[in-house]
Length: 177
Image (cartoon, one colour):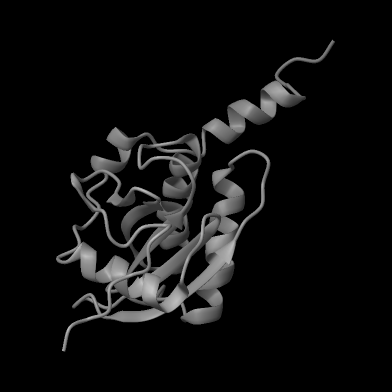
């Protein structure tokens, strides 16, 4: 008889669910608001052309200029914040040096997740939010917005901001001028 150990799918599920954030937890986390989320989302879509299944991690300067970004896909049967965090850290390490020497983080990382479905919160979104928060802490960045991009448009989780363009099935708008 063994005490204190659990194995099998139930144990994995409990651990995995601990690496997710609910929308209320995310909103209460003090995530800095984007001054112009439509411009940021549109710029990332122009640069990376995401399709469902694509994730974009971006690092913004204090004035919200894009400093670095990377797009990638993660294939997993069950959303797991640990795996997502490792994927984010891997990309962040490739595109920008860490800021761990700074007393306070100055750059902000955000994630744009292009997926099927509507713009409502999913367990996978919760895993990405946990992953973003943890990766930012480990890389010395401020944790920024988590944005979903679906066929109905884009949405900043934890905020009441979103729009119809760009969307997963519509190209981004080119800047006028």
